Length: 443
Image (cartoon, rainbow, N blue to C red; front, side, top):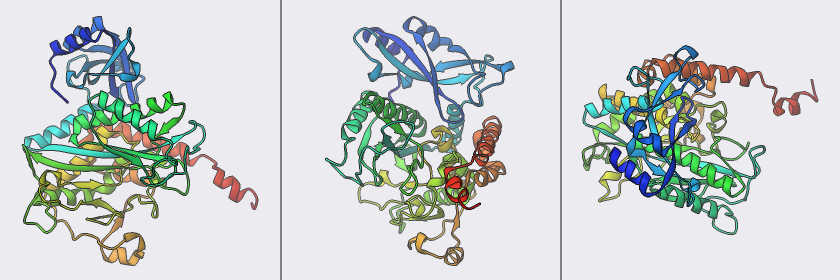
């Protein structure tokens, strides 16, 4: 996003007759939060921030330390198209959260990502990401009733959501968010809009905006959009494949013209870091009980920890190099889903890759066979292990990870672990329809 001064922001607000500015931030679980200020308050907010009560925000503060300061980031200023009318234009800015003492608040996910990006910058690297977010359109939020029976890349008349996608893309573009392409996904009523790659902090802000825009435009059309990873049994769930690379200035640090896979040593050790530490970060990239209903064999979601070029059953895919496209050299990490907290997910992936670089991990040969068709012994012989099978297993692995604790900071780490254990305890106590259908008639 373009760098903007405080004076430029104030000028834009005056020119566009903006009455309200929404100050956005994200809680630890990845939900967008915010409050509105009037245009008259903006100058003070840009200078000193705005105070608010953080005691009710997930993971933020206890009652006795509830005062927080939200400082808007001028670079994230944007009009909100669906809230704009002739007499009441509205804008938004993302905020960094501070304690009253002036220290950055360690429980702020945006600060967590900034801290990890600073570590990469110390070594001269910029972390670029390009996520592919999938989602479903349903008639309402109470039952997962698809709007269509379309399939992968289907067009009219099956794809009744083309207008929804078009309006969503136009809204994103009006907010300065570049879209690469969009299409109907594999499952009925499932869709994907891919964002053009950007630095990780800007992209995390864009992901939060994207999710809200998708839902708002759906609401305007009288339907419901959801990023729930697996809303319907027996069909594909929604993923968020994250394409990523490290740059040094204008040079892609992952590219090596002489390598068989056109992947540099930096790219290989980064990839090896993700492979080695993948189980430790799975609770971050797939953070809900429902996430693990998606991560099962047979539905295009990766389960097995390995890498490949063409093999989409692998956890990491290295897209084939195209001559003249050195900047496009990247890896694609395929297990995250679109309901994760992007600030924490990007932080965790970067931390794994940087650990691989720091310790010079060696990258094994790619898995070129379809891993879903391999037996357990074949996978074991090939050294291919699996991602955690459920949230409890994932959180127990994360709980013992020094790497993740260092990446998230102790405050976010401890809250996240505690919250996810509570989620699991609530989930395991439920009596599901499966149990009623299968056990009540016979027991």
